[in-house]
Figure (cartoon, rainbow, N blue to C red):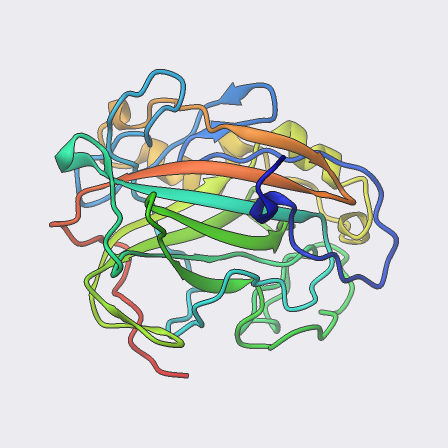
Length: 286
């Protein structure tokens, strides 16, 4: 029997949703049945996340946190806040690169994610237009926290989230942002500690084309940005970082249906003694 945590977030919607598929990359690019290339660059020596097919132990590449980060988010598994879209259950396992990629199981290790809604809007920045012809932001959920959250890892070093497949906005491919924090204290929020990883999970072109044709995503009329033309991807490829740090690493995806949800499992290799260049740990209390 499948783990109940992988049944996807409850689907609250105001529009009918047709079928689709899911694929993502954990700082590398992968799909339901195929993989593609990804990228990253950062202050530490970067490489792709642990490859579940051959057990290679490497660091996950760092990329910018982007302009839409908000600190002080709630510790919670379900971050949907009633937002419409295909349910997506995420399992993010954190491993210690400096210790042979042993799982990070300390109770102070936390994973934080955030992403836009089906039409490209971020909480806290709903006045920022996603580009193209797009409906007004639907007003569902907390305007400062929808599709954002933090989870502590469990005894296997894994943090679980229930969310929806993100949409897109100009000039980015569909993606999820993430940070890994260590050494902080958890109550309703995560306080103090150090941010040791800042990355992004990029969705591949064929999947983006599929969801763009289905409601509610199809209501955002905006030409898709291919991965190789993605702003962050291009900056990483053309920057000063070592191109050898952008090696492809497939991410295991379990397929599903819009009704039952989709699942994503990704492993993030970090060095807990080194802080990220992408931004500090959450400090603001809610």
